[in-house]
Length: 137
Length: 185
Image (tube, rainbow over all chains, first blue to last red; front, side, top):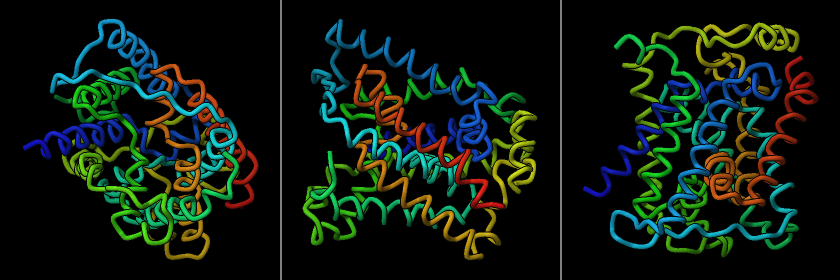
């Protein structure tokens, strides 16, 4: 039963990403060329509403559905990993036109070729795990 | 009901993404998609090769279910919620892309990259494989992707997430303006 809740949330996510064309390579190109507001509108709306929501959750010390306190864990304050890792990620995002979520939404949409990129993403993740101790963080 | 078949405007999408993030938060979880890639590696036995993957991946089953849902969502969108019309991108983008050898949109994706035929060419295969490799490596190195950093992290005013998003743009701009013209010409 609990499982179904997560599947439904994921399904909603997939539909939203597909219907707002956020899974489209063309939209990502438009974003990285600063030629349309669409993607900035999506991310911007989400961030503004997200900041307000998180602030309210903290202010009123809201609890989750099970009654547990909601805690937001801060990210580690070490910088190289974010700028270097982020740059690698951006290269892949602009090349495939998809970030991790849309890779899978595109698969469901019937673009089976994207499974090659999914395989690549798993290999990349594995590679990071192997090299982790040697990389600057 | 006609509107549902049309592309959804950005503000609807932004609002719904936050609602999904909040729903996960109130379920005691967090919104971060790329963690699933680590979980899948771990489930496939990568824990034997690196201790990074040696964790109780079953505790992340909820996120794998979210991933399964996202595939179903893509399927539903294609089958029932789409008219199959071309993405209405700006004229300037169409021009720029034609200059590097990518045809104007006829659907949601360029067949030069997403088409099965191109995936069976050496260049097409490598574009997808290396693109994916960069996404997976970069997301884990940076500790998150668009959902974890750009949405969840920025919502919590995390400076590291802002640095990661700046990194996303450095990489994205280099790929778009310097590398794509070389790759596709």
